[in-house]
Image (cartoon, rainbow, N blue to C red; front, side, top):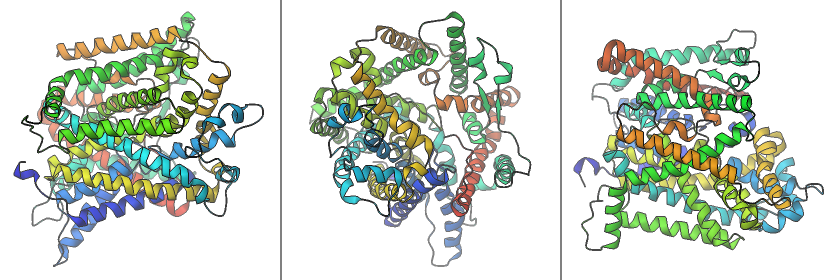
Length: 640
């Protein structure tokens, strides 16, 4: 292992990271679900984690430098704290508990004689899989003086190891793909740019590094600070003026068949503009272009009376694109994966993995064992082993493509909503799957595999990139990520259930508990009442999306001049695209103008200004997060 990467993770960095992780996880349910303020995570550049990093850099380290016996946190220690809070930040919210807990309870709480859920769904929901005590279910939504821990004991004992197995599989997949994506394909990792700049160690005669002394950075930082200060005052004192940050296009497209174009909203997010400035031009172009194409496609469907609805048509295109995208990524990495496989099969092979987060043999074994055991656990509660295994593998497909979108595409906020059953149901029909294989995934998918805005795997891959800046031993970083995940799971279960039972889910975020939670059980019950066969129309659309994605991948691989990146096509219709397309467009235009006027030299000179926009957006989000916790009134303005 090269000497520059042999710095050990210190015990104080691990302790600081674990305490910060526990604190963020503990406060997240109250902030996100009760106050409904700026999410502490909310996307793949979590405000809470970055606020912790800034606090250590701007407050803790300068104080330690002034103290004669103090020893400031090094770059590697700061990145250790950042990585621990990064990978754990989504667990108490959309990354896991926001949907998992509500989806466990919804099939029983919303059961009525009319919807027949008691007859259709309850026989397939084991007491290990979801609480069944009527008092536990009722108090979850209506509130209680205390948490009924006895009623939650078996579900906690089942779900905790299952989720840890999924996290182990994600860590192993990242360990196997890291060298290919970092060193061979040289993915850009835009989300890590700002943390790496912030954690650079300053000269001995200065409290802060050069990034914080750059005038362009402070100029960029001031833009979102001014905007959000004005708008924040308006949120708390409505008589004060505000600066509009969203511009609906509906007045321009108010007649048929142009109404789908009128659903476009031009939203301005400074952090997204700053992040898109860091992307390659073809990636930034593709994100906004394909979303416009999606709206145009819906317009054509409405104008022609096409028998398949616009959303259904686009959604199945994207499902096919996920399959092709994953296959393409693995095909490009085939040489690297072949060397790993040879090393696994041949004990005498010379394996160059000393600088990897995990030895390749361990990573392969961990991936296989975690997958097999997780499928076995799902079989124990009623699923077919084959369906459970295929469900998990399709989840991996989504995770790999999603991670690609984050670390190479730089999307802060992605909502894939590509559940494994949505691949299987059109292809096999519901009759072939059977009741248990429809009901159990309705909880598993919605709770663990559905809303990807805070999924762990992209953060794990970004965490494995951190040692390149902090000279930290990669294997130690994997260890601290594991500690953070365990801490977040344990604290998250307690914090989420305490908030829910104290206030009652009926008094928390309406979307989560009253709209999203019953949706998947409702869909499963519908399939059981009216089973369907293979839907060849949707399968054909899925195949068309797969072929078009293949075309984009081949063109991207073979022709440098090709302007459209396949990342833009993978999820161009979802909620995140609706939010981000215009801000990405602005960043793309700004970078294009800068390159045309001053070339690479001007681009590099202005780069700190766009990084400053990310910093300013995040700082103001953290400020209003604290204000919300103090006042009980949230003010949210970040994507997510």
